[in-house]
Image (tube, rainbow, N blue to C red; front, side):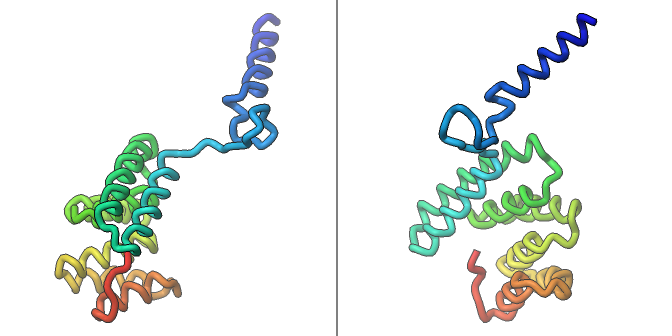
Length: 166
């Protein structure tokens, strides 16, 4: 009987506590802010870096890619089997010129999801940059039936008609 009362009180405290309801818009803090994951921060850093690249501000872009890696590594430590995180880790490493680690992260992501569209495109671009066109074409073949922009992008990069924009 005492145990039931304790569990009821505990459940009530959990349901009404700000920690439990932080993501709801009905919270008493008034700002309605949702918690942000390390992944989301890393993704935001990558998007900022891309904008800096478009403005030819390579140094700022590199700093943001490196920051993104830090956040993504923290997320990956908590959630190690997420192909999207591994894709961004590979992408950010490739953008800072660390091709070895980029390939490792892309490979890990493909082990989890062999048809991951983003990883296949970006790994193909990595293979083009590292002069392994045969391997890039293998990634293109995986994307062939996806009817997606990633297939078209990688095909243009392989044909030398376009530089990898990302």
